[in-house]
Length: 393
Image 1 (cartoon, one colour):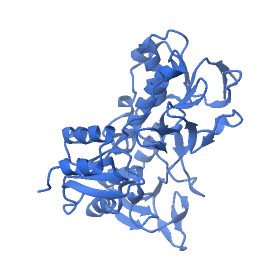
Image 2: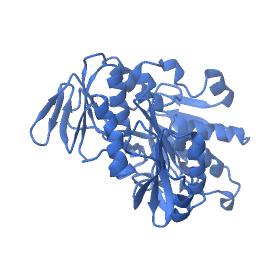
Image 3: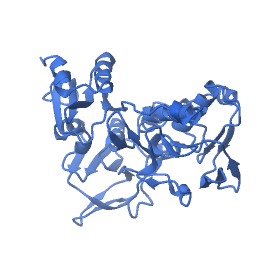
């Protein structure tokens, strides 16, 4: 397993649970044992948790897996013909089967040597140490990561300016109406949200805009997306585009599978190619890749066709979504109302063609969401799914 986060660990554990007793090597470029990333922009950044709560498994649990654990060393090359992975320390690790789970890294802006990003434990601790009451923080990018960090910083008393190039934050993912509601929460909590603003350069002292203007800051957080970690695969013959390109089984080549944020695969449930940067998918795809890797014959493999799930915590509200929301043709609020804002409960359903393909909810019970998830997994027709929905009060 190359990549020692949620996907790589899930693959290793799945191999052991299935009875595989051969050598399992887990390679990770960070010095830390596998840890959970979602709390970085929430509990760790806010100071509610210390780093000791992040490990995905305790030391004894890792030891019980009997792994050849290579931490703090990056993979630098892959030879599929010779079935070896080259490491930065000069070692070459042989394999019979390989799971690529190298994740992503933050996209950066020109001149951002003094700006923060938020991907690793060290990133989160470095920014947390700089956030105090009165700190002027500029967050570049109002996606879910930037929004979570802005919410946490406001809770710590920082003065937050949130800059977003799109007219409505998150609109491509959740639709304009829902995007406006989620954005309203920032305004209600004192964030200076500026949309339609493009940043050309970010430094520790502020940011410069395309119109020549400048926004001063004590600290800058750049949250403008990510780049799949695939450079080490150059020259390997594997297909790399928007991540490591895989088929419906998560296979990139014979004996090589992709999992987690780095994997771009065909999801038969939605009939589309997707790459998902969410914690739940990393675990599920790591497990699926390992099971297919162990399949006694190709016909025994199972397509990886999940109903993706993600969540976000902002200002005390829990945002949850199931399915494939991007590229939707229609959004309909089927429970609750958008009029009360993001702090009121509502559920929005998403249509592509004649199918229900996703739902997003704020303040809804897990039971309600599970019912909608089952409908998405069953390929429910839009008309049928909406007809069954409760009539909003």
